[in-house]
Image (cartoon, rainbow, N blue to C red):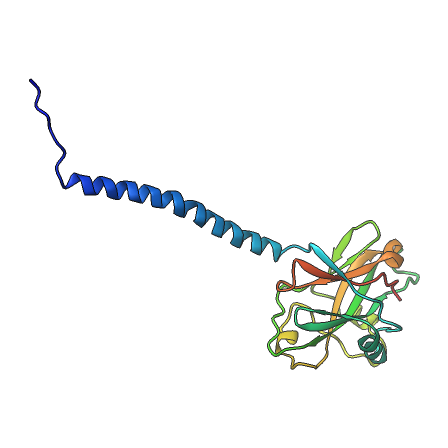
Length: 212
């Protein structure tokens, strides 16, 4: 007659521990996946422009020093702890010897930080046409292009991705220049968009501003 064997007493706590570990995994794994997924989703949102903030027209701003002052008084938007105005969109006009199908373009913005050490990371400025096609700025920019697009006596601006805004004192104005190579036929149908890592998924969309 077979004998009835019982499990050793020490094996019972071990089995309970395995069950508890399994139950804990059933709870922790989904929570961990949810936390990682939320973090990845948040990082993804910081890389996408999803929510447009339309900026009112900035009066008669023309890209000169006076134009920047006019823009500050008549237009612009608050974004990422700074006040931002588009003060000029300037293209190289066609002349004999230049390409007929494309040209260089400069967008000039004025950024006024509202707080010290404003975080200004991964700044992106684009020009977009009526069909939704977008052009990103070029870098480096030939010195001849910079000189040609500058107005007489105008100081050169800085790049959007530098540390100029972060290091600027609150209330000071930082002039930012972005340069593009675009088809000439779209010059009258362009508008400018701008965003930063800490500002996204929101981004600024300036009104259509025919290149001067």
